[in-house]
Length: 382
Ligand code: NAD
Ligand code: USQ
Image (tube, rainbow, N blue to C red; front, side, top):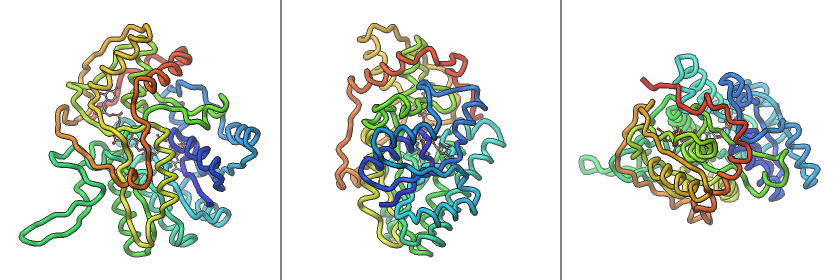
Protein backbone atom coordinates (compact mmCIF):
# COMPACT_ATOMS: atom_id res chain seq x y z
CA UNK A 1 0.00 0.00 0.00
CA UNK A 2 1.00 3.64 -0.45
CA UNK A 3 1.09 4.91 3.12
CA UNK A 4 1.74 8.42 4.41
CA UNK A 5 3.07 8.68 7.96
CA UNK A 6 2.42 12.24 9.12
CA UNK A 7 4.59 12.88 12.17
CA UNK A 8 7.01 10.21 10.95
CA UNK A 9 10.03 11.89 12.57
CA UNK A 10 8.47 11.52 16.05
CA UNK A 11 8.56 8.94 18.83
CA UNK A 12 5.68 6.79 17.52
CA UNK A 13 5.86 7.75 13.85
CA UNK A 14 9.51 6.89 13.16
CA UNK A 15 9.38 3.22 14.27
CA UNK A 16 6.00 2.87 12.53
CA UNK A 17 7.46 4.17 9.26
CA UNK A 18 10.36 1.69 9.47
CA UNK A 19 8.13 -1.24 10.35
CA UNK A 20 5.64 -0.58 7.53
CA UNK A 21 8.49 -0.02 5.06
CA UNK A 22 9.94 -3.39 6.11
CA UNK A 23 6.58 -5.05 5.39
CA UNK A 24 6.96 -3.86 1.79
CA UNK A 25 4.66 -0.83 1.85
CA UNK A 26 5.54 2.36 -0.03
CA UNK A 27 6.07 4.71 2.91
CA UNK A 28 6.23 8.51 2.79
CA UNK A 29 6.98 10.61 5.87
CA UNK A 30 5.45 14.08 6.25
CA UNK A 31 6.79 16.12 9.16
CA UNK A 32 7.57 19.80 9.83
CA UNK A 33 10.25 18.82 12.42
CA UNK A 34 8.61 21.09 15.01
CA UNK A 35 9.26 18.56 17.77
CA UNK A 36 13.02 19.02 17.34
CA UNK A 37 12.52 22.80 17.62
CA UNK A 38 10.54 22.31 20.84
CA UNK A 39 13.60 20.62 22.37
CA UNK A 40 15.45 23.88 21.69
CA UNK A 41 12.61 25.98 23.10
CA UNK A 42 12.55 23.89 26.30
CA UNK A 43 16.37 23.56 26.47
CA UNK A 44 15.80 19.82 26.54
CA UNK A 45 16.77 16.76 24.52
CA UNK A 46 16.14 13.10 23.89
CA UNK A 47 18.12 10.76 26.17
CA UNK A 48 19.19 8.88 23.04
CA UNK A 49 21.15 10.90 20.45
CA UNK A 50 19.07 11.61 17.33
CA UNK A 51 20.27 11.59 13.75
CA UNK A 52 18.60 14.02 11.34
CA UNK A 53 15.62 12.70 9.37
CA UNK A 54 17.77 12.82 6.22
CA UNK A 55 20.44 10.65 7.86
CA UNK A 56 17.79 8.29 9.21
CA UNK A 57 16.16 7.51 5.86
CA UNK A 58 19.56 7.31 4.10
CA UNK A 59 20.73 4.71 6.66
CA UNK A 60 17.49 2.74 6.22
CA UNK A 61 18.04 2.72 2.45
CA UNK A 62 21.67 1.61 2.92
CA UNK A 63 20.70 -1.25 5.28
CA UNK A 64 17.56 -2.52 3.57
CA UNK A 65 17.48 -1.11 0.04
CA UNK A 66 14.06 0.35 0.87
CA UNK A 67 13.23 3.97 0.14
CA UNK A 68 11.22 6.13 2.54
CA UNK A 69 10.32 9.41 0.85
CA UNK A 70 10.11 12.55 2.98
CA UNK A 71 8.19 15.80 2.69
CA UNK A 72 9.22 18.48 5.20
CA UNK A 73 6.24 20.75 5.81
CA UNK A 74 3.25 21.59 7.93
CA UNK A 75 -0.21 20.01 7.74
CA UNK A 76 -1.52 23.50 8.38
CA UNK A 77 -0.16 24.67 5.01
CA UNK A 78 -2.94 23.35 2.83
CA UNK A 79 -1.15 23.94 -0.48
CA UNK A 80 1.76 21.86 0.77
CA UNK A 81 -0.58 19.08 1.91
CA UNK A 82 -2.40 19.07 -1.45
CA UNK A 83 0.92 18.67 -3.25
CA UNK A 84 1.81 15.73 -0.99
CA UNK A 85 -1.52 14.06 -1.84
CA UNK A 86 -1.09 14.74 -5.59
CA UNK A 87 2.42 13.27 -5.63
CA UNK A 88 1.85 10.24 -3.40
CA UNK A 89 -1.82 9.27 -3.95
CA UNK A 90 -2.01 7.63 -0.50
CA UNK A 91 -4.24 4.65 0.20
CA UNK A 92 -3.63 5.08 3.94
CA UNK A 93 -2.91 8.30 5.82
CA UNK A 94 -1.55 7.65 9.32
CA UNK A 95 -1.86 10.85 11.32
CA UNK A 96 0.60 11.18 14.23
CA UNK A 97 1.47 14.83 13.48
CA UNK A 98 0.18 16.73 16.47
CA UNK A 99 1.51 18.56 19.54
CA UNK A 100 1.17 15.68 21.99
CA UNK A 101 2.22 16.96 25.40
CA UNK A 102 -0.45 17.80 27.97
CA UNK A 103 1.97 19.97 30.05
CA UNK A 104 3.13 21.85 26.91
CA UNK A 105 -0.49 22.76 26.18
CA UNK A 106 -0.90 24.06 29.73
CA UNK A 107 2.21 26.34 29.84
CA UNK A 108 0.25 29.50 29.04
CA UNK A 109 -2.33 30.96 26.63
CA UNK A 110 0.09 30.95 23.67
CA UNK A 111 0.91 27.26 24.08
CA UNK A 112 -2.75 26.33 24.51
CA UNK A 113 -3.66 28.27 21.35
CA UNK A 114 -0.76 26.75 19.42
CA UNK A 115 -1.72 23.22 20.49
CA UNK A 116 -5.38 23.64 19.63
CA UNK A 117 -4.79 25.31 16.26
CA UNK A 118 -1.93 23.01 15.25
CA UNK A 119 -3.88 19.87 16.10
CA UNK A 120 -7.51 20.70 15.32
CA UNK A 121 -6.88 22.73 12.15
CA UNK A 122 -4.15 20.40 10.89
CA UNK A 123 -6.53 17.47 11.22
CA UNK A 124 -9.28 19.43 9.46
CA UNK A 125 -6.89 20.06 6.56
CA UNK A 126 -6.20 16.33 6.36
CA UNK A 127 -9.95 15.65 6.18
CA UNK A 128 -10.38 18.18 3.35
CA UNK A 129 -7.34 16.80 1.47
CA UNK A 130 -8.77 13.28 1.68
CA UNK A 131 -12.14 14.53 0.41
CA UNK A 132 -10.51 16.44 -2.45
CA UNK A 133 -7.68 14.12 -3.53
CA UNK A 134 -8.27 10.65 -2.08
CA UNK A 135 -11.86 9.90 -1.09
CA UNK A 136 -11.00 6.18 -0.80
CA UNK A 137 -7.95 6.85 1.42
CA UNK A 138 -8.25 5.32 4.91
CA UNK A 139 -7.46 7.82 7.66
CA UNK A 140 -5.78 6.24 10.70
CA UNK A 141 -5.78 8.95 13.33
CA UNK A 142 -3.97 8.84 16.64
CA UNK A 143 -6.34 9.78 19.41
CA UNK A 144 -5.85 9.12 23.09
CA UNK A 145 -7.35 7.12 25.96
CA UNK A 146 -7.28 10.46 27.78
CA UNK A 147 -10.29 11.57 25.71
CA UNK A 148 -12.46 9.55 28.10
CA UNK A 149 -10.92 10.79 31.35
CA UNK A 150 -11.61 8.57 34.36
CA UNK A 151 -15.39 8.01 34.57
CA UNK A 152 -16.91 5.93 37.36
CA UNK A 153 -18.20 3.38 34.81
CA UNK A 154 -16.47 1.06 32.31
CA UNK A 155 -14.91 2.76 29.26
CA UNK A 156 -16.19 1.31 25.97
CA UNK A 157 -14.51 1.60 22.56
CA UNK A 158 -15.76 4.91 21.28
CA UNK A 159 -19.48 4.29 21.62
CA UNK A 160 -21.92 3.39 24.39
CA UNK A 161 -25.52 2.23 24.22
CA UNK A 162 -27.67 4.55 26.30
CA UNK A 163 -31.25 3.99 27.41
CA UNK A 164 -33.09 7.19 28.26
CA UNK A 165 -36.81 7.63 28.95
CA UNK A 166 -37.55 4.24 27.49
CA UNK A 167 -35.60 4.74 24.23
CA UNK A 168 -32.15 3.40 23.27
CA UNK A 169 -29.38 4.74 21.03
CA UNK A 170 -25.69 4.04 20.33
CA UNK A 171 -23.95 7.33 21.16
CA UNK A 172 -20.33 8.54 21.21
CA UNK A 173 -18.89 7.70 24.63
CA UNK A 174 -18.87 10.80 26.91
CA UNK A 175 -15.55 12.65 26.94
CA UNK A 176 -13.91 14.21 30.02
CA UNK A 177 -10.35 15.08 28.95
CA UNK A 178 -7.81 16.50 31.39
CA UNK A 179 -5.81 19.14 29.45
CA UNK A 180 -6.09 21.52 26.49
CA UNK A 181 -4.00 18.94 24.60
CA UNK A 182 -6.35 16.04 25.42
CA UNK A 183 -9.26 18.29 24.41
CA UNK A 184 -7.81 18.64 20.90
CA UNK A 185 -8.19 14.89 20.45
CA UNK A 186 -11.87 15.13 21.40
CA UNK A 187 -12.39 17.96 18.91
CA UNK A 188 -10.56 15.91 16.23
CA UNK A 189 -12.75 12.89 16.91
CA UNK A 190 -15.89 14.97 16.47
CA UNK A 191 -14.61 16.52 13.23
CA UNK A 192 -13.62 13.13 11.82
CA UNK A 193 -16.93 11.54 12.77
CA UNK A 194 -18.79 14.36 11.06
CA UNK A 195 -16.61 14.15 7.92
CA UNK A 196 -17.24 10.39 7.70
CA UNK A 197 -20.97 11.03 7.91
CA UNK A 198 -21.20 13.83 5.34
CA UNK A 199 -18.48 12.85 2.84
CA UNK A 200 -18.25 9.08 3.27
CA UNK A 201 -14.63 9.15 4.46
CA UNK A 202 -13.32 5.95 6.06
CA UNK A 203 -11.54 6.53 9.39
CA UNK A 204 -10.10 4.69 12.37
CA UNK A 205 -9.52 6.64 15.57
CA UNK A 206 -6.86 4.88 17.64
CA UNK A 207 -7.40 5.92 21.23
CA UNK A 208 -3.90 5.14 22.35
CA UNK A 209 -2.74 4.81 25.96
CA UNK A 210 0.67 5.95 27.21
CA UNK A 211 3.47 4.44 25.13
CA UNK A 212 6.61 3.13 26.87
CA UNK A 213 9.90 1.80 25.54
CA UNK A 214 11.80 3.12 22.53
CA UNK A 215 13.28 0.29 20.49
CA UNK A 216 11.68 -1.89 17.87
CA UNK A 217 13.50 -4.54 15.84
CA UNK A 218 14.03 -1.93 13.12
CA UNK A 219 15.31 0.99 15.23
CA UNK A 220 17.81 -1.38 16.86
CA UNK A 221 19.54 -2.13 13.56
CA UNK A 222 21.85 0.90 13.80
CA UNK A 223 22.45 3.86 16.13
CA UNK A 224 21.43 6.23 13.30
CA UNK A 225 17.96 4.64 13.41
CA UNK A 226 17.61 5.35 17.17
CA UNK A 227 14.21 6.41 18.40
CA UNK A 228 13.82 9.42 20.69
CA UNK A 229 13.35 8.90 24.44
CA UNK A 230 11.87 11.82 26.38
CA UNK A 231 12.35 12.37 30.09
CA UNK A 232 11.71 16.05 30.81
CA UNK A 233 8.74 17.33 32.81
CA UNK A 234 6.99 18.46 29.61
CA UNK A 235 7.39 15.63 27.08
CA UNK A 236 8.53 12.70 29.25
CA UNK A 237 5.70 10.25 30.02
CA UNK A 238 5.14 8.33 33.24
CA UNK A 239 6.95 5.00 32.88
CA UNK A 240 9.79 6.12 30.57
CA UNK A 241 10.36 9.06 32.92
CA UNK A 242 10.61 6.81 35.99
CA UNK A 243 13.15 4.55 34.29
CA UNK A 244 15.35 7.50 33.33
CA UNK A 245 15.01 8.98 36.82
CA UNK A 246 16.15 5.60 38.23
CA UNK A 247 19.16 5.65 35.87
CA UNK A 248 20.38 9.05 37.09
CA UNK A 249 19.68 8.47 40.81
CA UNK A 250 16.75 10.92 40.96
CA UNK A 251 13.76 10.05 43.15
CA UNK A 252 10.84 8.78 41.09
CA UNK A 253 8.34 11.64 40.83
CA UNK A 254 4.87 10.32 41.65
CA UNK A 255 2.42 13.23 41.39
CA UNK A 256 0.23 13.33 44.50
CA UNK A 257 -1.20 10.07 45.85
CA UNK A 258 -0.25 8.13 42.69
CA UNK A 259 -3.57 6.27 42.37
CA UNK A 260 -3.99 7.80 38.87
CA UNK A 261 -4.58 4.75 36.69
CA UNK A 262 -3.72 4.95 33.00
CA UNK A 263 -3.70 2.60 30.02
CA UNK A 264 -0.25 1.64 28.63
CA UNK A 265 1.33 -0.17 25.71
CA UNK A 266 4.79 -0.97 24.39
CA UNK A 267 6.00 0.99 21.34
CA UNK A 268 6.32 -2.41 19.61
CA UNK A 269 2.55 -2.75 19.89
CA UNK A 270 1.95 0.79 18.60
CA UNK A 271 3.52 -0.09 15.26
CA UNK A 272 1.65 -3.39 15.08
CA UNK A 273 -1.72 -1.75 15.90
CA UNK A 274 -1.27 0.72 13.04
CA UNK A 275 -0.48 -2.18 10.71
CA UNK A 276 -3.59 -4.06 11.88
CA UNK A 277 -5.77 -0.99 11.28
CA UNK A 278 -4.21 -0.48 7.81
CA UNK A 279 -4.75 -4.12 6.81
CA UNK A 280 -8.39 -4.00 7.96
CA UNK A 281 -9.70 -0.66 6.69
CA UNK A 282 -12.84 0.99 7.96
CA UNK A 283 -15.82 0.89 5.61
CA UNK A 284 -16.76 3.91 3.54
CA UNK A 285 -18.43 6.43 5.84
CA UNK A 286 -17.46 4.45 8.94
CA UNK A 287 -15.92 6.21 11.95
CA UNK A 288 -14.35 3.34 13.84
CA UNK A 289 -12.76 3.63 17.28
CA UNK A 290 -10.19 1.22 18.74
CA UNK A 291 -8.86 1.55 22.27
CA UNK A 292 -5.14 1.00 21.72
CA UNK A 293 -3.54 -0.25 24.93
CA UNK A 294 -2.63 -3.60 26.42
CA UNK A 295 -2.61 -3.11 30.22
CA UNK A 296 -3.35 -0.50 32.82
CA UNK A 297 -1.46 0.50 35.94
CA UNK A 298 -1.53 3.19 38.58
CA UNK A 299 1.50 5.49 38.53
CA UNK A 300 2.32 4.39 42.09
CA UNK A 301 2.43 0.76 40.95
CA UNK A 302 4.77 1.68 38.07
CA UNK A 303 7.08 3.58 40.40
CA UNK A 304 7.21 0.58 42.75
CA UNK A 305 7.96 -1.83 39.89
CA UNK A 306 10.65 0.48 38.50
CA UNK A 307 12.24 0.73 41.95
CA UNK A 308 12.28 -3.05 42.45
CA UNK A 309 13.78 -3.79 39.02
CA UNK A 310 16.35 -0.98 39.31
CA UNK A 311 17.40 -2.26 42.76
CA UNK A 312 17.87 -5.75 41.29
CA UNK A 313 20.30 -4.07 38.86
CA UNK A 314 22.24 -2.59 41.77
CA UNK A 315 20.80 0.93 41.65
CA UNK A 316 19.51 2.76 44.68
CA UNK A 317 16.10 4.33 44.04
CA UNK A 318 13.71 6.45 46.11
CA UNK A 319 10.08 7.35 45.42
CA UNK A 320 8.81 10.90 46.15
CA UNK A 321 5.15 11.82 46.20
CA UNK A 322 5.46 15.42 45.04
CA UNK A 323 2.70 18.01 44.87
CA UNK A 324 0.58 17.24 41.82
CA UNK A 325 1.03 19.99 39.19
CA UNK A 326 -2.13 18.76 37.43
CA UNK A 327 -5.80 18.91 38.32
CA UNK A 328 -6.86 15.25 38.22
CA UNK A 329 -8.35 12.50 40.42
CA UNK A 330 -5.61 10.73 42.36
CA UNK A 331 -7.78 7.72 43.32
CA UNK A 332 -10.53 6.54 40.99
CA UNK A 333 -12.27 3.61 39.32
CA UNK A 334 -10.75 2.53 36.00
CA UNK A 335 -11.84 -0.24 33.70
CA UNK A 336 -11.48 0.12 29.92
CA UNK A 337 -12.34 -2.29 27.09
CA UNK A 338 -9.72 -3.07 24.41
CA UNK A 339 -11.08 -6.03 22.47
CA UNK A 340 -11.22 -4.63 18.90
CA UNK A 341 -7.47 -4.78 18.16
CA UNK A 342 -7.10 -8.11 19.99
CA UNK A 343 -9.84 -9.59 17.83
CA UNK A 344 -7.99 -8.44 14.72
CA UNK A 345 -4.83 -10.25 15.85
CA UNK A 346 -2.83 -8.06 18.26
CA UNK A 347 -0.53 -10.21 20.43
CA UNK A 348 0.48 -7.85 23.25
CA UNK A 349 4.05 -7.32 24.41
CA UNK A 350 3.30 -7.12 28.12
CA UNK A 351 5.30 -5.18 30.69
CA UNK A 352 7.70 -7.76 32.13
CA UNK A 353 10.71 -7.13 34.34
CA UNK A 354 12.92 -7.85 31.32
CA UNK A 355 11.20 -5.11 29.33
CA UNK A 356 11.79 -2.68 32.21
CA UNK A 357 15.45 -3.75 32.40
CA UNK A 358 15.89 -3.26 28.64
CA UNK A 359 14.68 0.35 28.76
CA UNK A 360 16.68 1.02 31.91
CA UNK A 361 19.84 -0.28 30.23
CA UNK A 362 19.40 2.22 27.36
CA UNK A 363 18.82 4.99 29.90
CA UNK A 364 21.99 3.98 31.80
CA UNK A 365 24.08 3.94 28.61
CA UNK A 366 22.99 7.51 27.84
CA UNK A 367 22.53 8.95 31.32
CA UNK A 368 25.18 11.63 30.86
CA UNK A 369 22.93 13.29 28.31
CA UNK A 370 20.17 13.95 30.87
CA UNK A 371 19.84 17.65 31.76
CA UNK A 372 18.94 17.32 35.44
CA UNK A 373 17.25 20.70 35.58
CA UNK A 374 14.52 19.39 33.29
CA UNK A 375 13.48 16.43 35.38
CA UNK A 376 11.08 18.02 37.88
CA UNK A 377 7.74 19.28 36.52
CA UNK A 378 7.51 23.06 36.11
CA UNK A 379 4.14 23.48 34.37
CA UNK A 380 1.11 23.93 36.61
CA UNK A 381 -2.52 23.38 35.56
CA UNK A 382 -3.76 25.98 38.06
P1 NAD B 1 6.10 13.32 18.84
O1 NAD B 1 5.98 14.74 19.27
O2 NAD B 1 7.32 12.56 19.16
O3 NAD B 1 5.85 13.23 17.26
C1 NAD B 1 4.93 14.03 16.57
C2 NAD B 1 5.58 14.44 15.25
O4 NAD B 1 4.65 15.25 14.52
C3 NAD B 1 6.84 15.27 15.44
O5 NAD B 1 7.90 14.74 14.68
C4 NAD B 1 6.44 16.67 14.98
O6 NAD B 1 7.52 17.36 14.40
C5 NAD B 1 5.32 16.37 13.99
N1 NAD B 1 4.31 17.44 13.85
C6 NAD B 1 3.61 18.06 14.83
N2 NAD B 1 2.77 18.98 14.31
C7 NAD B 1 2.92 18.92 12.97
C8 NAD B 1 2.33 19.62 11.87
N3 NAD B 1 1.41 20.56 12.06
N4 NAD B 1 2.72 19.31 10.62
C9 NAD B 1 3.67 18.36 10.40
N5 NAD B 1 4.27 17.66 11.40
C10 NAD B 1 3.90 17.94 12.66
O7 NAD B 1 4.81 12.57 19.42
P2 NAD B 1 4.53 10.99 19.57
O8 NAD B 1 4.78 10.61 20.97
O9 NAD B 1 5.18 10.27 18.47
O10 NAD B 1 2.96 10.98 19.35
C11 NAD B 1 2.43 10.78 18.04
C12 NAD B 1 0.90 10.81 18.10
O11 NAD B 1 0.43 9.78 18.95
C13 NAD B 1 0.34 12.12 18.65
O12 NAD B 1 -0.81 12.47 17.93
C14 NAD B 1 -0.01 11.78 20.08
O13 NAD B 1 -1.06 12.58 20.52
C15 NAD B 1 -0.41 10.32 19.96
N6 NAD B 1 -0.18 9.59 21.22
C16 NAD B 1 1.08 9.51 21.78
C17 NAD B 1 1.26 8.81 22.97
C18 NAD B 1 2.61 8.69 23.64
O14 NAD B 1 2.67 8.14 24.75
N7 NAD B 1 3.68 9.16 23.05
C19 NAD B 1 0.15 8.21 23.58
C20 NAD B 1 -1.11 8.32 23.00
C21 NAD B 1 -1.27 9.02 21.81
N1 USQ C 1 2.69 11.42 36.29
C1 USQ C 1 3.36 11.24 37.48
N2 USQ C 1 4.69 11.52 37.52
C2 USQ C 1 5.39 11.92 36.43
C3 USQ C 1 4.71 12.09 35.21
C4 USQ C 1 3.36 11.84 35.17
O1 USQ C 1 2.76 10.86 38.49
O2 USQ C 1 6.60 12.15 36.55
C5 USQ C 1 1.26 11.12 36.21
C6 USQ C 1 0.40 12.27 35.69
O3 USQ C 1 -0.01 13.13 36.73
C7 USQ C 1 -0.75 11.52 35.03
C8 USQ C 1 -0.11 10.22 34.56
O4 USQ C 1 1.12 10.09 35.26
O5 USQ C 1 -1.71 11.18 35.99
C9 USQ C 1 0.18 10.19 33.08
O6 USQ C 1 0.96 11.31 32.71
P1 USQ C 1 1.90 11.25 31.41
O7 USQ C 1 2.65 12.51 31.33
O8 USQ C 1 2.62 9.98 31.37
O9 USQ C 1 0.79 11.11 30.24
P2 USQ C 1 -0.24 12.14 29.64
O10 USQ C 1 -0.02 13.52 30.08
O11 USQ C 1 -1.61 11.56 29.80
O12 USQ C 1 0.12 12.10 28.10
C10 USQ C 1 0.73 10.97 27.43
C11 USQ C 1 1.17 11.45 26.06
C12 USQ C 1 -0.06 11.88 25.27
C13 USQ C 1 -1.06 10.75 25.22
C14 USQ C 1 -1.41 10.25 26.62
C15 USQ C 1 -2.21 8.98 26.59
O13 USQ C 1 2.09 12.53 26.18
O14 USQ C 1 0.33 12.24 23.95
O15 USQ C 1 -2.24 11.19 24.59
O16 USQ C 1 -0.19 9.92 27.31
S1 USQ C 1 -3.38 8.90 27.87
O17 USQ C 1 -2.70 9.05 29.15
O18 USQ C 1 -4.06 7.65 27.74
O19 USQ C 1 -4.27 10.05 27.69
